[in-house]
Image 1: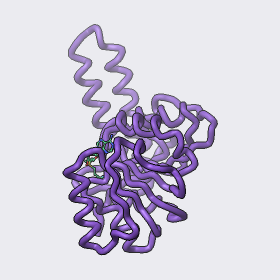
Image 2: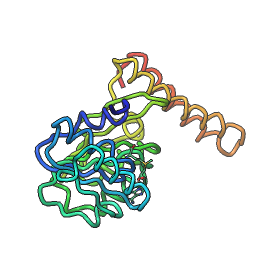
Image 3: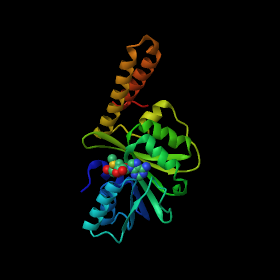
Image 4: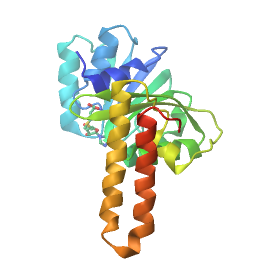
Length: 224
Ligand SMILES: C[S@@+](CC[C@H](N)C(=O)[O-])C[C@H]1O[C@@H](n2cnc3c(N)ncnc32)[C@H](O)[C@@H]1O
C-alpha cells in the first residue's frame, strides 16, 4: 500500500511500457506498479548503494525480480531509454529534478512524473522554458502537502509568469488543492514579512506579500 504522495505519482503512470523510478530508495513505487498491473516492467534506479540494496530486497521479497531491474545510476545516466514510457522522479528537490531531466535528453519521448519536495516554482519555470508542457498537476497530503507534476516534452516553450510558476496547473476545488495553495501562500507571506524588517527590501517584501495574497484569493475560489 502506497502513501498518498506515491499513489498520486502512480496515478499518472501511463503503463504503456517500462517505468523508470529515479531515486527509488525502498523501491515501493516500482513494486506497487508491477504488482498491481499498472505496468509490465520497471527499472528501480538510485545513485546510492544502500537504498538500492533496500529496493533489491523489497523486489526479491515481492517475487518481482524478473520484471523489475535495480540499477545503480546517477539520474538517468546508466539507463537505456529503450521501451521507457514513463520516468518518475519523486522525493527530491526541484533543482536536483531539473538537473536529472536536463541530463536525460534521450528520455524526452517518455512522460515525466515529478514530485518536488522543494522549489516547485523553479521546476515549473525550467519545464516551461525548455520545451515541456505541464499536462496536469495533483495535490496530495500525508504529513505535509505535496504536488505531483505530469510533464511531457513538446519541443515548444510556454508563456509563464512568476505567479503561474508558483501555482502551476493546480486546481482550487478540492480541500487538498486549497490546502496546498494556502501552504504556498503562507511560505511567500513569511518571506515577505521577513524582508519587511530591512528598509532596503521594502519593494521585495511588498512583492512577495502581493503574490501570497493572489494565491490565497485563488485558493478561496477567485480566478487567477
Ligand atoms: C528521499 S528519497 C525519495 C525516495 C522515493 N523516490 C520517494 O519519493 O519516496 C531520495 C532518493 O533519491 C536518491 N538520489 C539522490 N540523488 C540522486 C541522483 N542524482 N540520481 C538517482 N538517485 C538519487 C537518494 O539516494 C534517495 O534514495
